Length: 468
Ligand code: ARG
Image (cartoon, rainbow, N blue to C red):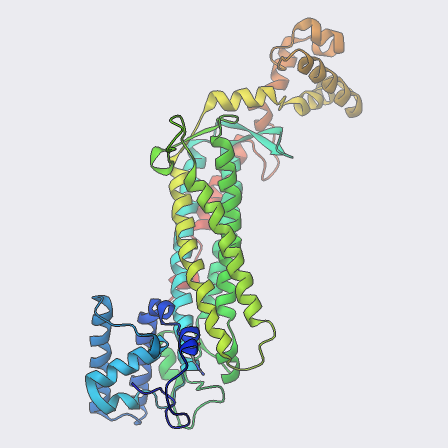
């Protein structure tokens, strides 16, 4: 077939340009959106009288036939046909003859690829937003089930203070909910019609963009045709939302890896989400969590990839813009996988009570509570109370004992205030410690119940894709 711009230039493209310029291997992913854009455009041309009735019908039938060919794997991809737009137009010409040539009236591939990616990103933002909702739901269910289980809370990866498992899981929940907000924003950014902008300046026909907007169900129309073909804000927002989500998922995945190690032993992961080793018979590796961590790196690279493409690009369309597809499609795939894997992990982990208790004890997790009890019940200044608790911890550590195992003599040797058994054991109980954290957002049982309720309510907030 001759090149689209045959007329100005003659002869075939250099092989190297064909190879460099072909994007069909990636664009084919956008075939539904490309066909939807073409259908809407054809109908609009018919509506304003540019396209005769019988040509419109032939074009629409041809597009349906092409869709079926692509879906049944019969559609042939050729590097000489560069991109999805050219493939569709070429096949349409084979199917319906010269009438196919009327479809590109008042349209450019620049506004065509823009509308394709807007539709695609809008769909992805909704799909991934919904997957994050499922992840958030799984976190709430698990949090509720573990509302009475205490786990060490860490700073510097050193045992700091006891918290409820629900508290830790919900800490991730709220972050993921903010990521869902980022996808909601992405949806809004992508929900604007670029088609009808032509190459950059608008078109020499009195087209009806409002008709197109309605046909493709966009909320708005780009006010400026140059903006419409030059911007990649929708992809940029999508890549940032996906990177934020992936990096957060990676932090959680890293905790799952740690918790699953022999050293922590806090969780068991269901067999379907772990692998064995080809040589070491004892191994049960947390591959699912490791791969979530790995994909976060890819998403981050993809965001930087697009930003580097955009930086320094003069207005309006430049061919560099087709490089947006590599990061877009790779991140789309990664982000779907990350969301689904993490949801499965949340459902597939089981907390190991005895190991959690052992770490709380060995980490002297309630030393702060002991100091606070000396302040509130024995009227000792905090500085001195901190010193007393610290001294007892030091003594225990030297003998490899926990606060629970400290003898009465040891306690008395540090301070007479520590002699009273009831006072002492109530102060160092990990459950008591958590339930005393009654400040709003704290780890006390009452606050956890309240937080679960708030989380449930926030999860059913209205989202842009569910609005009419
Ligand atoms: N394949 C191109 C892309 O993906 C379509 C637009 C081509 N426009 C052009 N002026 N060569 O961006």
